[in-house]
Length: 235
Length: 235
Image 1: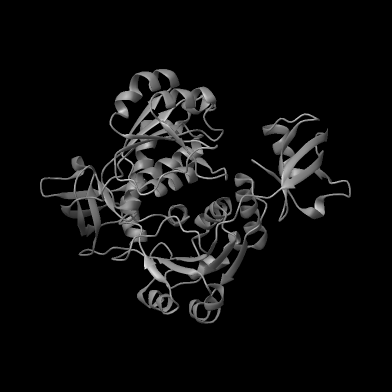
Image 2: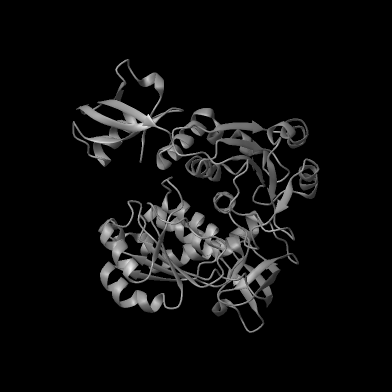
């Protein structure tokens, strides 16, 4: 936990928060803070700064927040990601939040097992928890949005034009395509397929919407590795 | 398992292999192969190609190998990595094998907990297993070497000059340093610190050996994320 992240609703009028549970235990047992000690802190969707430990008890701690700086800049990307299998989804969401992706669309494609949509990992509270862990890691405060789209074609035809309007549109796909570009600064929409890849029809539909297929070499990467590698190359 | 990887010692004179255990179960239950079916296969530290299923029984299967192509090109990098905590080590080794790193040196630094060296994850058979999983993912056959160095200073002073001779030398370190270069093709030695970073003394010793500190932004990444992001930017 590189950042203590608090919800604005948890703060009292004096900018103080009483922690219990995971965050309290972490401060007590891992950081081993004593009253008067400080640590980095941030307000969810707000500013970052420091928290000072005022009181430490067995089951709770009281801290005062002093926040004044902007969180790290987001990546200028909207990510369209074929829904990964549950264990990979959890890790991918953490990676994405850590790397600074703020707009995530999870999508059904031909090679996504339909049962994945019933996974507990997709429950809003689980998604929220993974995103928070990712933000804490990167000392970021800005919560990504995650939208679910269980039908490929209506998403691509009806929603994607607006989502990707005026952005550089890329779809990562193995094959005889140009190499993934590097060092972009403009707003970008990036589509990433499932472990088995997009099928031809899906690539055609994305190309119709202006998406350019790009590749990152012949090695087959896990989704979580591919996502990190693509974002690192692009930005 | 994108590639069935077999040890040359497992093959008989007719280039056949009888599989039991994990690989057999995977072919039977996940790939659901039937006699006559083919899948991608490779010989450890050798060529890649296909395997044809000849016989399928409950507890074993017999396959014939036909290998003729080179595995994917390795990355031209030697990685010096502060020993990660055990759970992260396992995942990092898989990522590194998948990404094509062939020379890995795991190193003690000031912020590496000494207890990590006693972890079962460091046993040769566990390291080997993680590397194999990474190779299978990327359809690679070339096993990386992993060397352990439990003393920082003797490693850097006595071994690193030879290890990094005639290579581009980089150390990833947060701070006011140049951005990580992109699209390298020359042989490179890359040093990556532990989650808490290298200490000043360690950076000084690396700089003395010709290492240039570079940074990848203000976000604090987990080791496994940082490794993937750095390699994706560099190559």
